[in-house]
Length: 492
Ligand code: BES
Ligand code: MN
Ligand code: ZN
Image 1: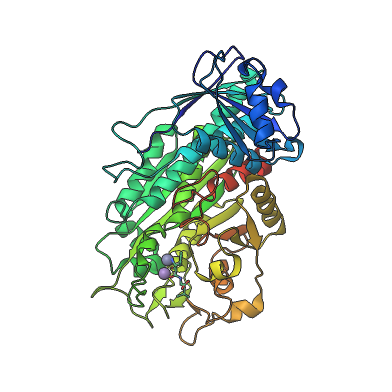
Image 2 (image 1 turned 45 degrees about the vertical axis):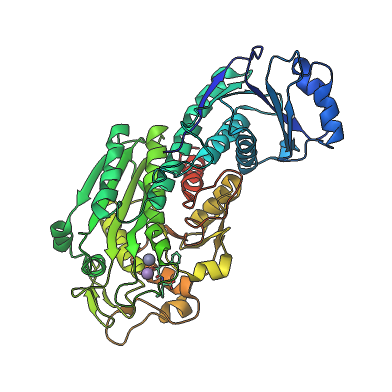
């Protein structure tokens, strides 16, 4: 795995060696900011010559002048820090790591512009930028010989507060990277059973887990999920993870993930071009595992359950056919028009199981559900669908803060009608128009009265455009969004 920097927080002290990292609000006096590090006004002169004024994410990189205790001085512009969001600080930390990747020791002097929250977001972005999924490269990118480990020491005045905040923020960053790992992992390595085992590993953090096998799922009547699985040599699984950090009497919040470890489309097979991307069709499930990791590692004061439907969608002699009718755990019947609309079939039974077993206060499902959501929103917002305005508003706010943005799309009876079937209670596709909405309408038929939201993450979980704090194909989208939502709506 990639070499991640180790990040520690300590009291302000004189820098003796390594690279010094400073954060400059726009218009700040650079000579004053650099202080002792700037022997003979070299840094201030470099800033002037390169017109560095502290604009957000601008980088000034100076080899330290003779007499400076540091070897290198890097100043990152912070723009106007008063209005900066969590996402802005994360991006800034990522940009800083981008400039400093080759150093072995970096000391960040966190000035007055950075409070504990800013420091921890910055560190989170720094760590996330360093993530690279290179375990299958026998020759690592841009390295001769052994990769170098890096230490980032953050000098902060309010050391205790910053340390406590960083413990939580690092837990969340680790959850994001766990989700990225799961999405990046190829499907020959990460099948249904292997995915379930990765979830069970959260027991080490105090998460209770359970895995349902095929026999149990048959007994529960999960005909929709099992129909998808029947064309694969890999057996289906349902992974259940419980974090009990809240009061014993409180009903949990529930997170449900689509875990299709590979989606060929089944008998309604997909075209060959780009099909390799379908190893990421468990991006929703990955986010749920990453979130459960984050909640447990930071000992969140909530009860939460994560439920994941794990299948592989393959065409073979035993695969389900277009036209097949299956009976879901809810008792409702489904005509399978297109075997490539498999995610909703998996989620139907996962949602029913979740609702009946846990009577959750709210259910949020995440799924790489439709190509149509990318047509509508591109890769910068997930599609949000909900039967509850408060849940929708909370998720929207959490999206703005975390930078993992969501955009609400409508539901309604006219769309619901589009999935009525001639032969069963419903069909699994609604026609050419409004593909993401009809998919959400389908899920809605399995949630009853429970407050619920569906996040279509097909555009945001994988094949991600690179950003200041993400260079990975699998983005880990959803972990920071939902952690923020849990903190604001339930731990408040
Ligand atoms: N996993 C896909 C959706 C997807 C597409 C995710 C591209 C990420 C990138 C899903 O199972 C699917 O195949 N959806 C179909 C639905 C259609 C058959 C109604 C789609 O979007 O084409
Ligand atoms: Mn599909
Ligand atoms: Zn799929």
